[in-house]
Amino acid sequence: MKNLLKGIALVGIVAVLLATAVVSACGGGGEKETKTVTLGWLADQTGASSGAFEEVWMGMKDYVTEMEATDPIPGVQLKFEVYNTKLEYARAQQGYQWLMDKGMDLLLHYDPPEQAMLAATQADDQMPSLCFCADVETLQTDYLYAYSVDYINEGRAIVKYLIKDWWETKGMTTPIKVGALVMSDMQSGPQYWEGFKAEADANPGKIVLKQAQASRTQTGWAGEVGALKGQDAIIFTTVGPASASFLRDITAPNSGFQGVLAGTTISALAFWTLIADTVSLSELDGLVLPHAWALWTDETSYVANMSAMLEKYRPSQAATLKQGTTWESGWTLAHILATLVRNAADKVGSDKIDKAAMLDALEGLSLQIEGMPTISLAGSGGNHVFQPNLRMIKYNGTEDSWDNVTDFFYALP
Image (cartoon, rainbow, N blue to C red; front, side):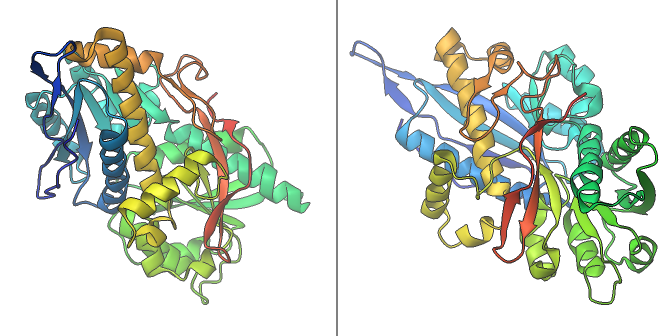
């Protein structure tokens, strides 16, 4: 295969096409067109989470470009079709139909509520989908798969860490006071809160929870800072500019907050470039987050190769992209997708890959990445989650890096 990933037009609806290539038929004497496998993606390209999409997309494109040049899937050409949801749930159904009309073989999400909203339609169409993380209602639903755990269990993991690995290790015997900044206009907010409360109920007498509500478009936080500054820890669940502006205000010298900050997987790392442009990063030293992907600080050959590839494809952006983990996540997601397609081709033949073959490949996926638990359904207790493990990581303001503070642990019930 000799054609590489073409340019992208991010105007409204984006179609990214890896041009159809031609390979020689075995035995000589003729040529046949490669099989085009279409991966559809419902993604926010212009809304509050669009910055995260852009950086993840960079990692995905770079992986596919490198793969096509060095280790192409015999007889297969990958084609991405991307529909701009603008982070508006009402656009999910029309976006899905648009992608169906494009002939997709697998649907991608990074907004779990959309996946749950489309569950019945996907079942009718027998269309498999893969999301960055699961919505709690889809963990065992036919055709729906996710890389990481749902927001409820992620919320439980954060609170458990704050109680066991932070507060109690300081020798504190009084209940820890935890404030939660919960988005009122996104389904993730109430799910995180449900997880926080569930873990608090599992630890009676050890934690006092306080909630402040936020919206995805909010940029001023005087009231919330005043309400939460007396807490021992604050967990924020905001996205995009709201995350950046909240961190700016809560870490300001006059805010009065002296505790530890904790974020969710969608609140900080996905928007670290934006946060770095808004907040003095030295003030974020000690920020903790749950994480299910590789880290730049992992001393593995996989990370070393990613680092080399980032320098190869994004030399002018590498330093900035290494501050967060969005590009890494995109690279790894593309690695997973390519493995799924490669496995399907090996099993049914490249010319027979369709949505049924992709569903079968999802069920049978077992991918080992150095330094991480196996990416497989085998360890998820019957849930459709490939990485049911999280680890807590902490921002090192001195080194401008993310470091492990726990090993990977099982984060589902």
